[in-house]
Length: 295
Ligand SMILES: Nc1ncnc2c1ncn2[C@@H]1O[C@H](COP(=O)(O)OP(=O)(O)O)[C@@H](O)[C@H]1O
Ligand SMILES: CC(=O)N[C@@H](CCC(=O)OP(=O)(O)O)C(=O)O
Image (cartoon, rainbow, N blue to C red; front, side, top):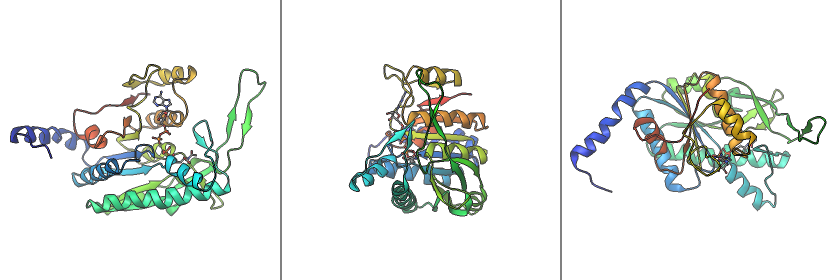
């Protein structure tokens, strides 16, 4: 480990004080993207950041993705992942895989890492305690040549109908850290696959979160030349989608980042999950980077 002069170490530690004071007791929803968690060292640094935040009195709530991890298992089963407007086409068999990977492997690995570093994490899916109520997502597509939009059936994919935060409040009252897999429950009890950015946004709104951080595998939202856009308004976003600068997995992320701002979350940021300790740097130092979403 690099050794710094004592006064430098003290200065770095003191830099965190005003941030800790400002964010004390505040809820921070952190979405850990599947693309940001492919490296073991990064996962470890992420888990330690979460433990530190809790220890100094913030209230972190983790929502995780796992798109690449679902693709890996699908490939082993001889299936190819297919996406429409950033959403996975989810047939019955794919839904089973989504539950195994998100609710099983990925969720439990994050929980175990946080706990190994001294945190008290509890893993949940949206089906637990009716946390995330879902309904089938309707997707439509229209091109210039089409007279009316075409409805596309992408299977067991949900949108959030409502969030019941009771279980999260209970966990918070006992100082547990919730780690949530983005699977919702329909009226009939069936499972729905929901994009993790969507679940993180809705949970942040219902909890009245101070901040929503979306960790991904880019520096933030990039322009056509690959340069980081540090701040975006709803109008900027519309133009960037229109000219094709924002596409694929960034579409639901940006849509629901805006949704969170409109729903009262004070700060929403898309940040680079490939940077070790991105969460800590963003929340407790002057070195936060990424794209800030404005209403
Ligand atoms: N303008 C853009 N800036 C940055 N990334 C973009 C942009 N448009 C599309 N993307 C794509 O969105 C991806 C992030 O979304 P996604 O793959 O769903 O990640 P995550 O697993 O973090 O949710 C990036 O890796 C990139 O390929
Ligand atoms: C409907 C839908 O697309 N669900 C996502 C859920 C996981 C996710 O969102 O993972 P990332 O955050 O890593 O992209 C999926 O099946 O991949």
